[in-house]
Image (cartoon, rainbow, N blue to C red; front, side, top):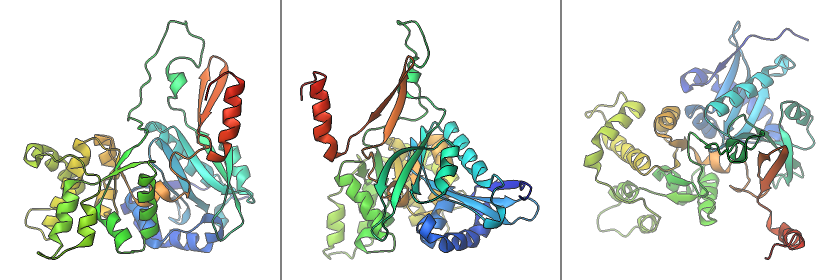
Length: 380
């Protein structure tokens, strides 16, 4: 066994960019195990700070990487890979450990990973505390069964936050605090490029379409800003009927606000997202439009903004820390091929010495659940 490598983890886009070709090569060579991400999707992840690369501090060689996403309060690991020449040196363990620290600092509740049931990697994930919560069929092209594994993070849970995880006086209630709200139907604002992915059948069409389908299924609450329609209208020939524009006008839209009243907020956002953009630079109209979308998101306290704009994705960490706004790509919501708020996702808590788990049942389990409830005297 080789001595444990001194690994440095690169997390920002500027740091990761020189190693993107290494990541793409590793991902393509191991597609049957890791799954498929396009070149553009990998770059989007890197822009959003969700592609971490481990390098040997001495040789500067890429020794592994971690690709993740998801939306608050859950982190989803999409790919974890360690170079064959550097395995058995704790690299994967260290990358996952750093992700857990990141999640706990951000008040995330858990991390999940989808692992082929036939892979030896299940032992690795189990060793790191990822418990098997359910099994699901794999993609259409394989007969593989997928193990969904979840690791709970050391962050507040519902009953523990009320002081019920340990013995406390019966009249004592402790306030549960989260750094960010958890919404049953989180509101995600869609950028125009996500809409165009669907109507113009671009390379990201499937992901964007799945995102909109989640909205129709009430798993999320998608919205657009008034600027969305205005921007689309500016690209439509005057006097010409445009079915795409008419469709956009039917989308749920955030309430209109007077932007002149929010000039300080616009200036703050510009200093974060476009710090080097002046009013004389080319593309100033595009920057103005992007900032308008973000002003609406922050003002209305939406859960997130779904975009493929690289500048906004690169500013995602700062926007999350300052305003609580998640900046994500479509893949963060749909890449796992599991419906959002899917049945089978468990929440664990404690009541005294008893561990209690809550989950949403699948539709085919309804009859069994009803029989159980009737058996304990609960009317349907």
